[in-house]
Length: 165
Image (cartoon, rainbow, N blue to C red; front, side, top):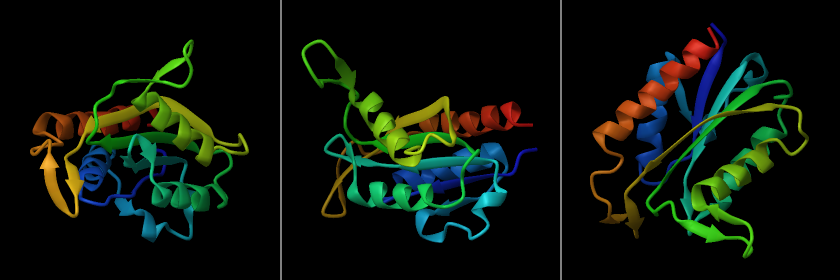
């Protein structure tokens, strides 16, 4: 099998839970973005996850994705995922080009990680709802990600494993 790793950024634990399930499905390790391995160039598949705030990738998410993009990851395959407490509604960029929030977040992640166009960002992506937190407390969407979301995250990992075996 291809050597793979799941790297995530999580504030309240939603993205971590999803990362761990994706990693379980892949049969690999899930690590926090603060622990990116020095031998990252040895991995063939990077599965990267974060969370947005106010429908945008957070500054922390942008920072670690930029840092990772500067490492020797040319030629790598990258799959993206995120969790969000907000709904996936249309948010028009312009009158004739409405985009869903989900599309905007994935597009931002892709633009950051693949700034030089030297990696393959896969079409396989995963999104699920997370709890909304303010001041460290859940204020909405309690119970998310759900058991079904976590099962789907594991299946996402299994499908990536099949694709790269």
